[in-house]
Length: 499
Image 1 (cartoon, rainbow, N blue to C red):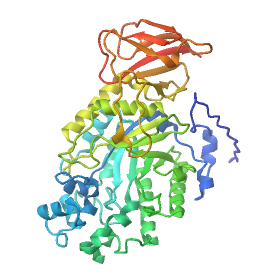
Image 2: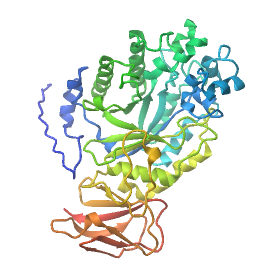
Image 3: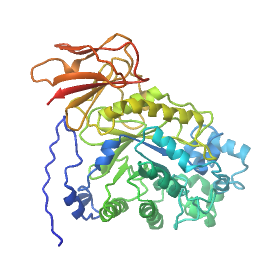
Image 4: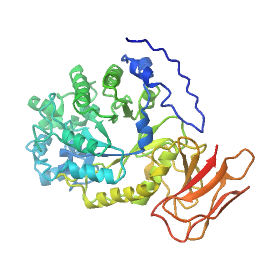
């Protein structure tokens, strides 16, 4: 017998708990039916698995890579910049492929063959990196679908590789107990190919790729938005992603390609699908005005600069978004430090790796992912399934918040410490973002011996088997470091307490 469940949920946000998710009971969640209105969508809760996972991987890969990997900077814009005479990509395209009227982006697509793509190898590498969720860029601005789509002939089954890339990755990723994600960037397609209309993009027989030729200030058509929504729902139904992620195109007036009505319908369709199929899902996007109502707020190449009460996400990359042979990569140390900073502020990281056009993941990118995995193997308990503590950290280094802020980042020092805690609150993790030196003393000022402070029972260093000398006074908790580092990069102190 069906029962109508009425639940009044009171979510008490304190700095110790710092949680907006998990307030609704499972039975109540199953009874929800979402309407395509912001008021109704506000009911949706961020899934617990996402808050526990902390670290995921996705891949910018497709026909864009054919042009980007040997070309000039800004590879993710290859399909647009190749039609812009003032761009270095315009000249590069002519020198490598030919004049744009004869060899347009439509002619680049068949060159994307993915002959070395191996979903099992990819998934094995992602699991070894410590990722708990992973998946492809399902469709980028270039409108090329990386799945077998009924909405377009411009997909990886009909052209290029002649394979359902998304299906292969879903199977391999789930086999390794990772959650599966799919990211969508095609809201901007309406604008992306506008420069092509002076070249081959003006031919209506290629409108399935370039969109129908239009003026640069023309709003997107109903036909375009119907297709945008249909493709998202098709991926949801066919591949059952646990997380969907949306690039810009839902936000500012300048880039707003999808109207609020279609946005609301997309969220409602996904959340109702999840209810019907008894799945806990999340939808990430970059827009605060939407986040007021629903979804996971995402920062591209940036992050929150303080501890916030809602879970959030950073999307960043080991290097360029799409593979470029000449591009520099970040160090493992940089990525680990940023991951720790993100987690201490109630966030998660989605890290991009750009495979080569043939489907091989570049050796340097593999080394970075394995280095992150080595660090998480030792220190994972201070990251996975944790929650923020009373403060996110201490130390001299504070970096700017917001999207596209990472290029201003200062490197962290051994004086910079970030905190997480176990869900039961009995364990605090103090993660030191640099080795202070053998025998040196780390002082954690946030844990000074003051009236009403946490009662500490023991202190351990993850990866170190011996006991540590420690004491607590009015200056702070002071721990003598051992003679040998337990790992590379950051170092996690496990602080047990009575609560």
